[in-house]
Length: 273
Image 1 (tube, rainbow, N blue to C red):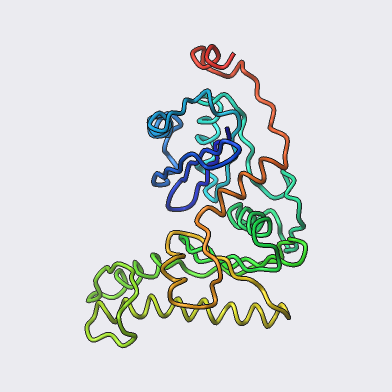
Image 2: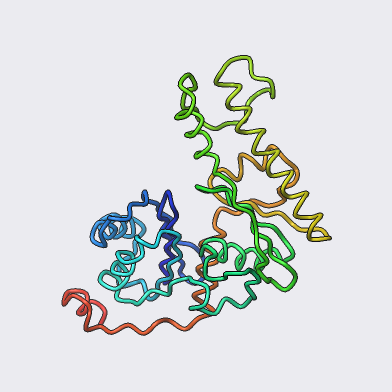
């Protein structure tokens, strides 16, 4: 079974795929100083609740935009699951498509993973919108080539900035307001965030399509994707698992890294031998 680890700026998502389907998905807040043992206490307990053991894991793939978290995630894979993880990075793995940007190694792993999975499941050309800590738009051209994109402030970042910068504005939750014109402070803020981001999505998609010179499908992912998909006809599909799917597809494309069992604790050596 494959352990896929998607480490974002806000959460680390762990998921297990058995070759046919995802057996479970779990998330924990991202903290660069979280140790491999802390991850293991969280993850091994949840695996057991799904009838899985550490020895069931035969491979691991990691995608992270938080470089400081990679060391302990690697240790987690090595010490607790007995495998060397495949790390999703431009230039170090076979992606199966061209990365047509000025500095390929600077493109976030999540954006390339989204492009890989979106082309596999929906066929390019297309745009992937990821409603994460940042709101990103990634363009996948004919044949699956990654041709670039847009990075905008994330929705929760915008909400927090409003609250922090304006003394009288409260911290609000995100939701679809009943009307565009707010008749109080909170509804007015909710309208600005919700319809403002709908306008951002529609405007940028229109400009990308005009510059691209042809139609592009629009796929949305991230926790807030379903909410914003309800507010516009521009988004054609929502897919919460697209980054995890990218990790699964990348692991299938690349040989597993070589792991030396001599680095394992004795207890795990015995279990895996």
